[in-house]
Length: 64
Image 1 (spheres, rainbow, N blue to C red):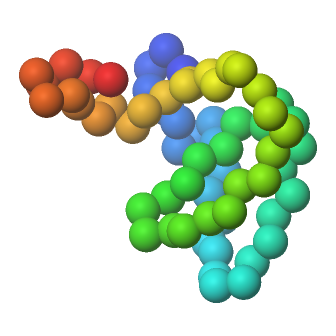
Image 2: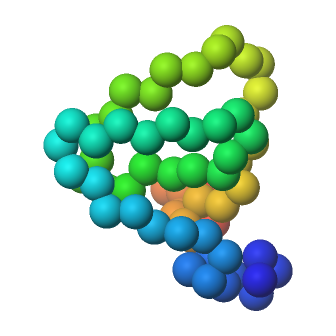
Image 3: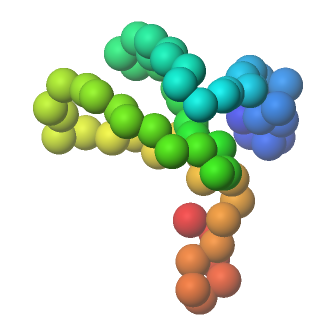
């Protein structure tokens, strides 16, 4: 599914409302949707894995 870009079949989406709280265990793939403001409290880490960047492009037109 990853290789063919079928992210919507692989991941779940949750609708959020002001004041919602979600516990996201360490190592869980997660993302922040448009228009959502969050406070993400986490342990200090030197590593962040970017799994997928929604086919966004950089200023030169290349996918990020």
